Length: 345
Image (cartoon, rainbow, N blue to C red; front, side, top):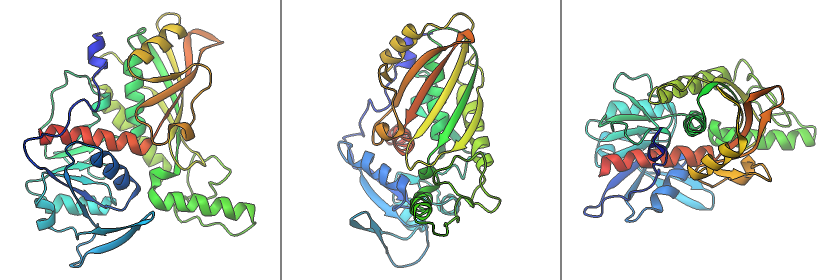
């Protein structure tokens, strides 16, 4: 396999310097929107960013973002069409509304609410081969960050030896359920320690000091639905890498605020060489931690993947275990930015 295909940098280009680009962020006060604003504002030249609310109210919406007040323009056909690209980072309902309103603007959906639309194209530039034909579709959906991380790592591992099979336990952070998930976990943590009644609006069960294979029946979104989305997105991304087998995936909700953690088991056709694996992953830009395994707390705010605890399976010399972490919000935002750059030129 050509190493250059795997070494394609995610953020190698800059936005075109010959004209000023206007981009919209729908749901401008969400966790994803904040991450998007951060990566967009780091660009040079910086595009003109328009924050749109998820409503069609005629008056601007004032929202508190940490210590700053954020003013968002109502989501209408006029406010949407004044931009080259619109990032959908709010609720699924807002994403569907934006789809109805858009006629010329390219939509980049980070909510996955629109991935069933016939015109949608699933994207993850950091997990795609460099020679993959770019899409000019007006609706591009960013893959689930766990699917991006899994595909990226499996593609790089395939250079060290032919893969036979793999199994991934994915530990989901509360931030994947947005600010409501973060707040519920925080309140539950305080509530458990003070013997108070727990807020269970999002997860419909206790998450604090707990691990969940399923949410409660009245949860806002079933965990098995998220698991199926990760499987579907991983299968779609892997289709660009002939010969890579589909991993078996189990999603577990962890009582952590940010960052995906994954326990990955990979079986090769021949004996696993952990030194070669660490060397190649490092060459491909993966942060390899041979001494102290990385954690989701360590990866917060960092780009890319970090791995550690690479060890041969004691019961199978052809297999090895790898611990993987990634900042879920950063991974989604940077892949969305890479898609936008393709559209902006």
